Length: 68
Image (cartoon, rainbow, N blue to C red; front, side):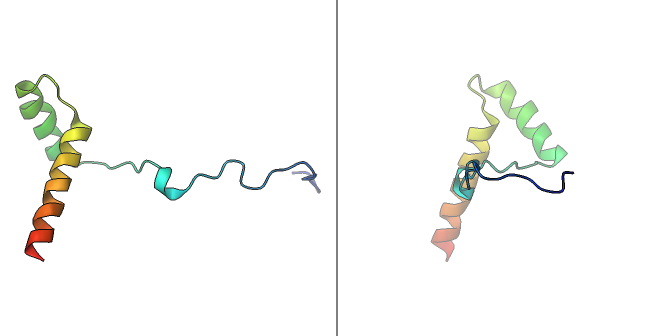
């Protein structure tokens, strides 16, 4: 490393992205992945793991709201 760095022309926050814009990776258990990739993929031509998981989570949220 250099002893000193020149930050005269530096821009603060040049690469900053709010947390709301970041995609958070979610890792599924092997059993769950197998279920979706095998059983559901065979039944649906328009299979999208992302859409199905989001749909299930939204449905669970609605159920929790009704139960609260």
